[in-house]
Amino acid sequence: MQRTRFEGKVAVVTGGSRGIGAAVARRLADEGAAVAIGYRGHREAADALVAELGGGGRAIAVRADASVPEQTGALIERAVAEFGRLDVLASCAGIEHFDALEKITPADFDRVFAVNTRGQLFAVQHAAAHMREGGRIVLTSSVSASKAFFRHTLYAASKAAVESMVLNLSAELGQKGITINAIAPGGTATDMAVEHGASYLHPDLVGKQDLSGWLDVQVALGRLAEPSEIAAGYAFLASDDAAYMTGRNLQVDGGMF
Image (cartoon, rainbow, N blue to C red; front, top):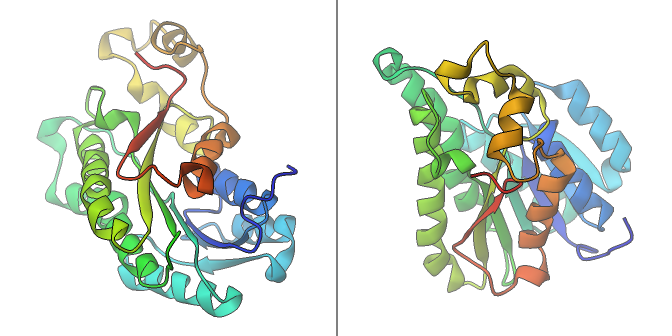
């Protein structure tokens, strides 16, 4: 990667040890950013990524559970202390959930919304306090916020709330010259897809069609995205190329219909 759109800038990536978050951290670092990677339980992966990106001078890893706002705040404070500023927040931490309505519990609701919704809101709060004019915030929604899947209500609702937050916070943060947008990824070739991909099938198709067959008829490009392809969307929204884009949700889904 030869571009230098983020030369001299500092980014925090939550959920940055693997999957889409790791791809975002790589993309921003490849384009010149110093990166602070937040992780919850994959320390070895986070440390390996830091080494790949050039070590402490260019990247650090900080354990931070996205469901605990104080830990996200400590991650952001560490980034500012280490690198002297904060220009980009890429909020990539998230958890999946599939279950039928009658099986959803209050504990399920609290767990999913704590990471996917509350965690992202307070990440914005902490990050915005350190950002100057020109700051960029990119949250993570999902195509599930606007497309129905069986037994996916709780997860989808947590992501739809993110899109509403982005829309409403854009006015407030715009007064400070900070943009805020969201990415809605489609199916992506990550560990999460391996674990949950089959759950996206219509119940009548379980055992009759595999995920690749479903992708052939539901996605224009007929395949899962590579994490790097989703990361390109984050990099765009975090860059000056998107300076006049805020309050919006960018679907990067391969043409899902």
